Amino acid sequence: MRNFNKNKFKKLIEVSSGREKADLLIKNCKIVDVYNAEIYDGHIAIVDGIIAGVGEYEADKVIDACGAYASPGFIDAHIHIESSYLSPEELGRLIVPCGTTTIIADPHEIVNVCGLDGLDYMLEASKRTALDIKMMLPSCVPATNYEHAGAIIDASAMRRPIKNEAILGLGEFMDFVGVTNATDEVLDKLMTAYENDKIIDGHCPALSGNLLNTYVSAGITTDHECSTTKEMIEKIRRGMYVQLREGSACHDLENLLEGLTTMNSRRCLLCSDDRQPKTIFEKGHLNDHLRICVNKDLDPIIAIQMATLNVAECYRLYDRGAIAPGLRADIVLLDNLANFNVNRVFIAGQEVATKDKYLLPIEKYSINKVKGRMCVKDFSKDKLKFSLKTGDVNIIDILPGGVLTAKGKAKVEISEDGDFVYNSNEDIVKIAVVERHRNTGNVAVALIRGYGIKEGAIAISIAHDSHNIIVVGVNDDDMSLAVDKLIEQAGGIVLVKDSDVIASMPMEIGGIMSSKSGEWVSETLNMIHDLAHSELKVNEEIEPLMVLTFMSLAVIPEIKLTDMGLFDVNKMKFISVEIEKDI
Image (cartoon, rainbow, N blue to C red):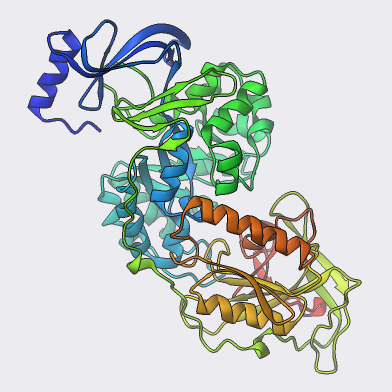
């Protein structure tokens, strides 16, 4: 990973030996040694962004750490930038002051919307932040064959980008069925990684036994979907790295720490998967993960290993992950190893943040190639109507506390022409997915229970994983208006009540990310959440946006809705809304 020429190499050796001055000396540190799992006092000499040595040195600039703990910069092992709703530059501004210096990003969402234009945008935008953003090439675009996405990235389309040095490997391989069945399409994708000596991230919730053996034998090295300690231990036993996730939506870290030992901790990594601005402002980023670990009585140095050295070794980032000669000077100065308050952050030897403040100017990359992406054909209110012959229906039941659903049944009232009649005494409403990428004109309608909405409608153009439009509401007029407004503003979020738009949040970047500041995004999301609960009466126990975004994800049980229809995930087939019409 070093970008040396001979002169820089010579200068590093001269400084390391003490014959020349360092550029910077950070003195009086308590250095976190992630190799020996100990702490020792020392001074850190830096030249050309590289650690020249730890010891007695002279330097052109000296910073007195005054006994602060010097940790290697934190590395997030798996994150989707798009799930923050922010541009890469803006996410960097928010999380660098939290001590995060590198992230392993999977741009799966924007590539599903914009194809390789989305990947190119993310690569270029990532150059505009101090945060070192390493990319994985999305492996499953589309994520399934049960919905329309904005692109198809097959093995032939992967051959150019996989050679890019900025691409570490293939992103989370969600098609574990294709892997275990050794389909040609999947094998061709895996071969692109092997032929270019790139690593492969996994995504295999609850996979075990021989199926897990098969998945791992295909060369897939990580998984961030463990929900139990038994699952975590089995995957480590099979040689995988397990990414302990603590995001805004999924909270697995505290539970999985119960299965952590000093012996298996080196196969464990910290990751956020998703992290929204509100969570960052309130809790931080990986410094929050570390705080949770220590609160669960984990040795703080082991926790730091999981956020630094372990990740670096897993992703072959051999130029970072520790404080030692020859490594990048990615250094975080901490008040203590209990609450992990961050004092100062250095990336490649440059001070980039101090006391919650990002120090560098923000210059954002053009979003023109990924702007909007709303290709909706002939949408109308009539497409939201049912033509049911019976009121005995299959229904999406929201399960509390997550994104899982159950296949429910209900008896509902229908009109003379077979449309659903909303009953305010029943927590059952319409939900629809509107295809927005390929002008298919597809609109699929189903019924959902447990969301709690009693007024108006909510439409959003974030719907994992293909990010079509998803809308839920108590009447067709408000649902239709919400969709129309969403198309007009080129994506984002719209709330409607009594035929009036009461809130909206444009997301100009592919309809899934905002070009505005993290503060604006957080404040706007807070306002939308408040209105969803207070004005539209969404269930107080429901996160009104996050829950909606997962109602079309046709890889998470039990039933979901895509633009192609109501899908039974367990049976892997489409079903009719009417019970007697199951096919």
